Amino acid sequence: MTGPIDFTLVGVCSMNHRASQPVPQGLSRSQPIAAAELYDFQGERGRLAVVGDFNSAPQWDKPKRPKFANLIKRYSDVGLSSAYHRLTDEPFGTETRPTHWWRDREIDGPRLHIDYAFNPDTWAEFAALEVGGFEQWVAVAGSDHAPLILDIDLTRMPPSRAAASSREVDQK
Image (cartoon, rainbow, N blue to C red; front, side):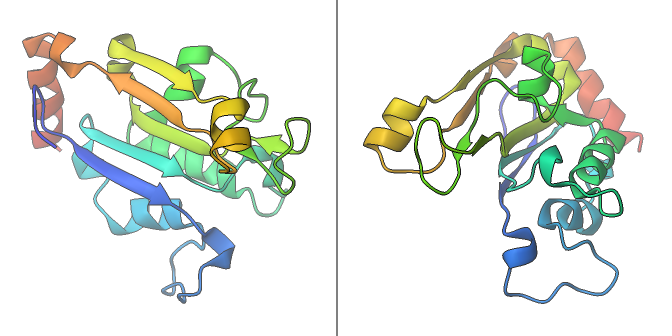
């Protein structure tokens, strides 16, 4: 996308272990991690956003298979962090605003936070975040997800910061 700064937007709708396509040897079965391995996320440092339905949460990690923890580490290594967690200061796995109502789609049923927007930390001061509610998105619209709405006003980013983000990428 282009605007005050050029950036790459990667949309995610991850099926992870339920995907019907075979996973190339050496790549993670977690599609968001495999994408980071296949595409040059490091080369996009400072101007990359990875957003969508990750179908993953720390509650599903197992001691010998910490998939979500690996995802957070891999994304952190290329300068990305979750906008929700950065802006709310809530730890992963203890989110107060779910994005998914699992199985029965009841307000008191199982609910999780499995939708994320990972972007550079430097965008945080220009961001506003909202999570759609159960009533509008699940009860009325019939989805099992409520949207994570991240509004980043990059026009407010000082030209020196935008140029620095681009230079940071060019030097890698």
